[in-house]
Length: 484
Image (cartoon, rainbow, N blue to C red; front, side):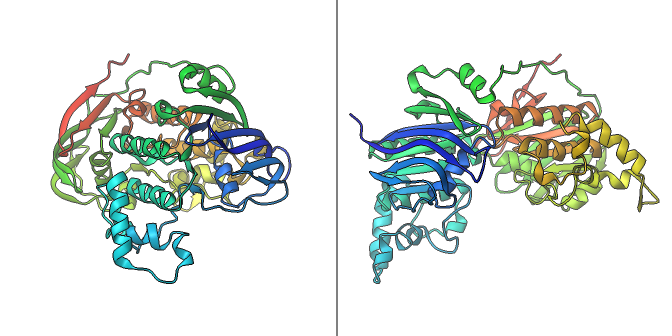
């Protein structure tokens, strides 16, 4: 019989109702992989905050490693329970060996550090779990995937019994997902338990012992791997019927909006030739999730072009930077939208129309508020915002409405080309629907939409064509979708 290492009973977290974790239950056994799946705002990340000692337990009981944690107190961080999330705990200017061993909690008790010894021990650890990473590599030189591997190995060195991982798979290409799955299975075989928090069941479904569905802070169903049902799980996540998949029409026109000729850019892309038409939605896919992004980023000056030409509406176009691209009616949605996100202190209306005020202004400085008020009324109902909330600061809205406002801004801007870097990363089913609808609206306006993704299944529902790059950075094929 497996030994239980974590039990959470009737757990409520938050200052007052509605609680972010609401009568939550969870049990994890030794050497078990548990997949916790929930939409945005379901309460997954709050577990990470709790076990990092960041939030107080309102009521309920947590039993970890035979220790009971009562309400009214924070969880005391334990070296045997490690949390890995979006914010790295590694020191970028230090080497892999130093991060694993010098910063290890075990080493903090020692005043003497023998460099030769830690390099030797690091080689043994990396040789077993991650032979492509070297002890003397600086953390800042590593990919995000490699940094997560180092964080996991530091947990192993700390003799961790449970590792909680918060939605990190979204950053990976397909090859990296497979490598991480193998690493997690090795840790499982060493009796280390893993709790993977995710918005998407596809990441870890086939290696999980249990799949827990969480909605609005409550776990609504626990599946075991052998009885998991994708359709039922989706319905439980949404809390209603699964939206029907609608075949979208193509808005592709004959006019060539962008022609790429003999493009060499970044570290991987070599001699790419591509024509993108008006109203076409085109996906760029690369198994390593690198060359596809280099092509897209080169269009907005974020990736250096070594050689080749870009012709935009028949004229030579030389990218400079993002501001230059936007001034040429090229939209850009980065993977991380933190620096182009909404202004929390501004209202819904001002956030929605900030980028398009120039187009609706008189003499370039006087805003025509009759136009803005008309557009505001047009989009309020569509975005699920009532009249009472149009002047509310956007920080009061949930993630879905905030994303809708951000995407609607670009629809109103009416770009001729829209570059989207992994728009569906970290997007649950509801968020994905919002993103697809915005892309559809852009294409219907005649905008050529360029999308990158490490997951080809994110591209298939919306793209007219998916361009695939091989490991050497050449275009090897293009999947044409037969649309109505």
